[in-house]
Image (cartoon, rainbow, N blue to C red):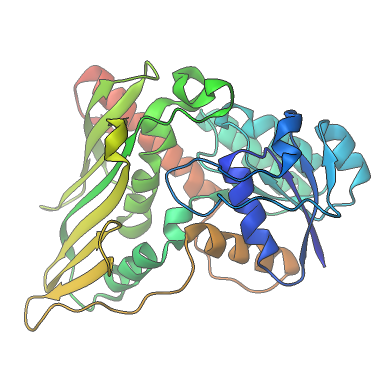
Length: 338
């Protein structure tokens, strides 16, 4: 039995709770949150993606408002860090010092230096650090990555990724709309697609971004061109400046030499392959969602099972380095080389 703890019981903490509870051989043994109201078991967790709305049952689960006490008393094997981004590093480092494997929500940190300290703490402890870049595990994005890597339809010539959201007004003490604590939409939201770009295509040579400041007083709508050798046209757009009635949408179009891959979360079926010869079709994709699949992957690794290398701490640092370069490009109005 893998004994897991969760620190931070907001939307993502509840999502992790749901995913762990669905797995055999895993026990959520302890949860820590400084807000006692979070333990009333109410549903209604707000976020861009559904899945954390149901009321929670904390029967048999130790509840804490002191993280150090939880570490000392709960005999955990692993920990989910689902706190605001500016708290990721100190809590992750403490968990490694306590000998735990850690799944920390994305983005890894607000600075590359903090990410490197987290990685160093993981190496020193000999424990696993996985950052929650769930899009790598999202069934349609995973299917697209497999098709890109296989070369079945030739090379990628162009791609566009979009992730657009209403303004997120649901965070604890409004931290997400404080750019100094969240990094704005560029670091908190758009990094999903920046990370996927480097996952599917490798790190670009340079980036060129335009961005508009929004409710976080940071870059809350950003459009980036990712520059590679050759004539590839790769762009991504991220925003949480959309009007409340807009809701949330994520999508991509990937143009290969012999096909176009299309994903739109608002359509059903969501994923389509359009070959240059023949009819468009909807291939089967894996079950679940990015959250459940990444947590299953983490648990298997903690158990010692062999798992595919889907996300590494260094890649998570590189994704942070990439999106921070995008912000520098937007500020300077010029190319930033990586």
